[in-house]
Structures are given as C-alpha cells and as structure tokens.
Image 1 (cartoon, one colour):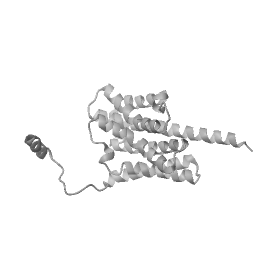
Image 2: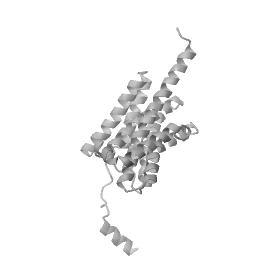
Image 3: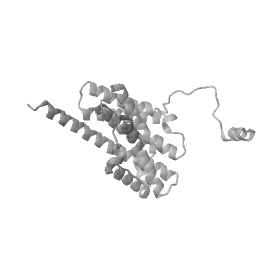
Image 4: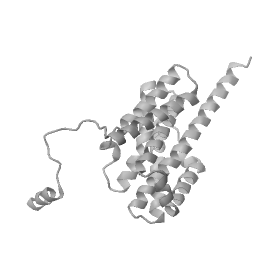
Length: 232
C-alpha cells in the first residue's frame, strides 16, 4: 500500500496534467476562433496573430491573476504562445479549409468555451477555492477570451448578447464541481462537463435560445441614431 503522501502527489500531478491538456486544447480552438474573426475583418498577419493570442489566453490569464497563480501560465509557459500562434498561422494561410471545417466561427468558440470552463474550474478547485467560486472562475476562464476578441474588433462582446454563452460555461463548470464533490474520475467529469457546455451552447445557437431582454424600448436603427446625433 502506497503512503498517503505519494498518493496525494500522484493525484496532484494527474490534475495538473489534465488542466494543462484541457488548457492547450482550449487555447488552440479559441485561437482558431480569434484568427477566423480577424480574417473575416480583413486584418493583416500581425492582426490575426494578435487576435488569436488574445482570444486564446485572456480568460486563462484573468483566472490565474485572480486566484494568485502568478505569473499566469499563458505567459510563463511557451507552449501557450506556440499553440496560439500556430493556430493563427494555419488560419491565415488556410482559412478556406478552416472555414469549411466549421462553417461558423461560433462552433470553434463553443468548443473552446467548454474546454476552458472545465480547465478553469479544475484549476480553481486545486487552489482551494470553494465550489461556488470555482464554478464562477471556470465561467470567467471560458468567456474571457471571447470578450477580449470582440473588444479588439470593436464589437459588443458575444457574452452580453448571444444565446446562452456565459450560462453554458457556468453549466459545464457546475458539472465539474459536482463531479469533484462526488469524487468521480477527473477525466470523466471533464469530458462530460465540456460536452455539456458545448452541447448547450450549440443547441442555443441552432435554436436561438436566449435569455430575456428588457422590453418597451425600440432598438435604434442607423436612421434613428443619425437623427439623434443631429439633434445633439
């Protein structure tokens, strides 16, 4: 029978490796999402690489800074930069192929959302956060890259206007928290959590499921907005 200390070390290493794998996978697919958005907006190669890195790492950097894991893994580990730049270069030179693999950038975004939500929750739990905060940090990890991408492209972030974006990330993170509390295998919980997040987001895209918005106000059109600006 192994000593308790060795068992705990092995468990910690297993969780760390799982978080790293999920983080790198999420980095790649979010980098594809950011790079495709940049290509669609006709940015040059440098702009595509900047968008791919920002979309791929901003959520993880925010998570690490808030839980005290400094320097953030995305800055301290060269693999994050390499993976995001690789995805950006592939997308820049082969964007028709990338676009055919996923006819909408939102598919890559949904995949990255699930992977990052799960990885962020695992890392938050490993740093001793309580289950509620761990789930919230998982959500932050998932939505941060998309927010950075949209802000750099001067768009309203998807998380503030799209179909069940943050809620899907929170749902996936909650699966991880519940699975950890029930002591289910980390790998199984991660797969189920990421798949649940992706499935919920994908179904929301397909069926236009949205949270309610405040009623009673008309959305300004370009014509009405121009009239208001003229009155000013």
